[in-house]
Length: 339
Ligand SMILES: [Zn+2]
Ligand SMILES: [Zn+2]
Image (tube, helix red, strand yellow):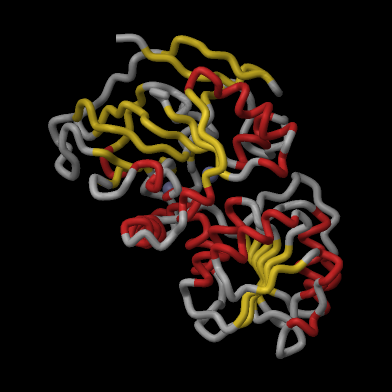
C-alpha cells in the first residue's frame, strides 16, 4: 500500500511526497486519516515563525481517523472504530510525567510538530493510549477535540472559578474555544477583545452574553473590580501580551495560551510591580481531552460556525496560502482526505 503526505520541505513550501506506509507494533493502531485541522501553529511553522516547529516534517496534529489495523495488545479500540488522537508522545519517566503533567514532559515529542510526522498524511500509526473512540460523534465535530482541549487546559491552569469576570484577548479558533469553554463554566462576565469585527460578531453569536470589544475600547471600567479576575491571552504577539499585562487587575492570573515569539518585548516591569501571575499553558492532558470530548459529544460547541472552510487533501498547500493571504476570511480550516 502507498502512503502520501505533505512535507514542510522548507519555509513556505509544502510538497506532496510518498511517505512510508506505517508499520505498527503490538500496542499501536493504524489509522486512515479522515479529517485534519490546520492549526495556528502549523501556519507559524510554515512561515518559519514557530520557535520549535521547523521544516523537515509532515505537519498536522489535529485529526480524526478510522482504525484499519491494530496490534495484538490493543484493547481500547476495535477495527473500524472512529477515533480522535492526542498528539503528545511522552517518556512516562521524567518528573512531570510521573506527577500528572505529561504535557510538559522533559522529552516531549508532538506528532506533526517536532519529530514524528503528522496528520496531513493518508495513513499513520499511533500508540493505542493516544487514541479515543468517538463513534458517536460526527467526525467534523470531533476534529475540534484538540483545539478545544487546549482551551480547556488553559482555563484549568488558571484561578478561574464560577462567578469570575474574565478577559479573553483574541478571537481566533483558540480564543473562541476558550471563550466557549468559559461561557459554559458559569462566569459573571466575559470581555472578548479582537480587532476583527466579524470575529467579535461570531463570538457574540456563539456566546450571547459576552461583551465584544475592540482593542481601543478596552478599559478597566468594563469590570466591576478594577479589572478582570483572570486574563487569557490567545494571540501570542507582544502587543496583545502587553494588553493583557496592562489591563490585568493587580495580583491576578494571566494565562498565555497563544505561542509568543522567541524574543518578546513584554512589559515584565508590571509583572513584578503588580504581582501578576503570568502562567504558560501548553497543550493538555488526558483529563482535558476527556472534558473536550464530552462537550463535543453533548454538542455544546457549534462546530459548524467555527469551521469556515474545508479543503481536499490535494490542496493542503493552497489552503495554507489562502489562509495566510486572507486571514480575516478564515477561521478553522480542515482538510478532508476523500473530498
Ligand atoms: Zn492545534
Ligand atoms: Zn516525560
